[in-house]
Image (cartoon, rainbow, N blue to C red; front, side, top):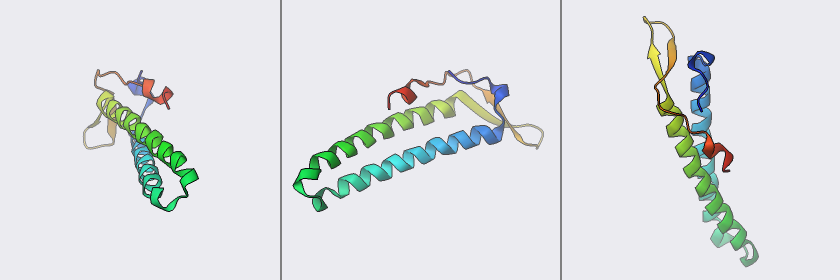
Length: 101
């Protein structure tokens, strides 16, 4: 469930938007790194690296869903050439994915 729009200013909304995006990039990097290291790892660590790659790949999916839900739940609008304001769009913010990982 999204917080009330009057609780967020544009800077806070944008900070959250960017943090989620950074989480996606971090999980993507971790996935790529762990899967590319498979040929370099000894046989006893290959299973752990494969599982790490799968888990972070699933986390990417969840972060993308959270990111899309966040972007759809709010709208940044410019008011009279001043700072942008944040308004609810009416779409529900699905925060359930944050509890999965």
